[in-house]
Image (cartoon, rainbow, N blue to C red):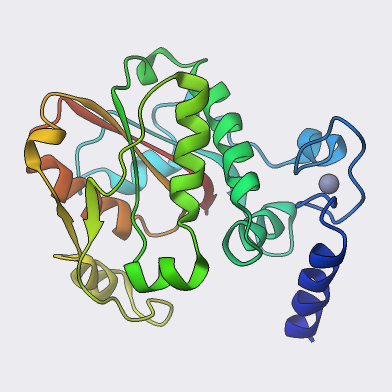
Length: 232
Ligand SMILES: [Zn+2]
């Protein structure tokens, strides 16, 4: 039933591209990807204003980060789930850019995120990126970069290993699975920089942790993290 519902939604989006990615209603002129109604009602975390937020605490003792924020809470059946589904499976490149703009506006309110030198999207496995046609984290990163006027790394951080589906694994297995999955092309690229690492959803934090561990071998000045959604 759920699958049918998703197929129906995807079909609707194909036939009527001017629908809100959060609630599937028609967008009015001037609205971009997300309707005004949704923009007001999205479950914002305001984590950018609270350094000791749940997403940051999730990484405590695992990797050292300057600051961690997520734009929205992720809950099944809510608008955020529609946004993430759209971002990943309906070719939501423009939505990625829009969400990037929204994240950037939050980052500008918090001094801890000032002085970002380079934005690094979490890479997808090349095969998955070919299938999807884009990396949604890259789209989000481009959106952030456009507002903050900061360059976005393309292929500076790469995904090397083959990761099997993680959905049925426990936290430790996920972490082990993530080790050696990422690599850098040129370690001089990140040296002494304030890096903003960007992903779509943070759940266990295993992917972000593995990326941070790899990036930290290049001696960056600091690493901050921003994601669209956080799963509690
Ligand atoms: Zn809406």
